[in-house]
Image 1 (cartoon, protein in one colour):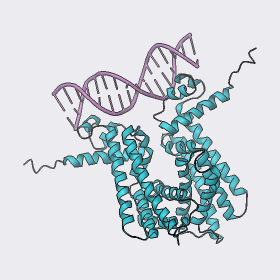
Image 2 (cartoon, chains in turn blue, purple, yellow, green; image 1 turned 45 degrees about the horizontal axis):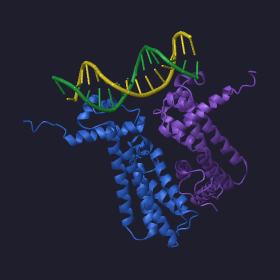
Image 3 (cartoon, protein in one colour; image 1 turned 180 degrees about the vertical axis):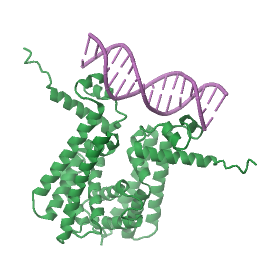
Image 4 (cartoon, chains in turn blue, red, cyan, yellow; image 1 turned 135 degrees about the vertical axis):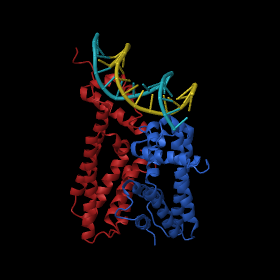
Length: 198
Length: 198
DNA sequence: CCTACCGATCGGTAGG
DNA sequence: CCTACCGATCGGTAGG
């Protein structure tokens, strides 16, 4: 019976395509990746992809939107999980680092392919990234106001903490010298040191 | 007389082309930049560039080689300028940050376009970057051995310090809130805090 | 989901 | 340093 044949549901097919695109965009770059490349990765011809996605650009947008949504959600959860600003900062940094270790490819594509987003999509993405940065800035400012952190410059401290987390995506390997948890813990610690936290 | 006419010397013409390529590669990316784009920036047609450079790839190689050579030289000078490991580390971080503030475009191209280097060139570049990283690692290890630094992990501390410096290239603006010197000083300070330096 | 194909782009060469 | 042009590639559409 036709209801028994294993036809991958529509959503799964599309998800597979997005996953393949993510891997290829991260590896070769958006421009260097062809629709044929993506098709080959999911056992189709390039033109067949258009039954599932509207365009190559659409794939990039979907990847980036999912990424930033995850990051923002994890950040919010971390900050709302406690009232102590020092602990909030630690958990926010840990969430930041966990994302960059677990979603290395998304992290790459998210920053390196920003310029290949269409005008409107890029504006939205940049604004969401700004929000994320602001969340950290407010956290550090509050810690300073409460006398819990001592920094030369809030702005430079925040950039430093975020950038060192972003860097994790470059070198982290599953099954390597450090587990995700270990890296998250160490980076939380380093961030607190950098902030002169009590 | 012909010796009086202002013909730009050969080297200058080539330097102008490399400079234009740097700006375009950083802005649009290597693949998205056409030889016509570069030509337009120096008031020529694309094909005319081939009188000065062998290929588009050559331009990328030249940009990257110059970059890494500068970084390695500045690092060496910083380390050789004193015997105190704490001061060596501070000066090495300052040199690292200065480079990423002053040569923002080179920094972008140097990391983001690595994958568009031909096999051989890429191997050389990766090896030189490894050398740079090793220089920092040895510095931190020596500081730890001398009891001057206290870190959870040398490796993670070095990655963190390097990555936060790399991040400077993203947001730094000449004439902005901070001067190059201020940024270099603050980052040197943050690195020492992160290392638990005495 | 496939083949055939369009229209546009691009690095590099020819030949002044 | 320029125009003309080659050969190859690519996103996307037509029409099954």
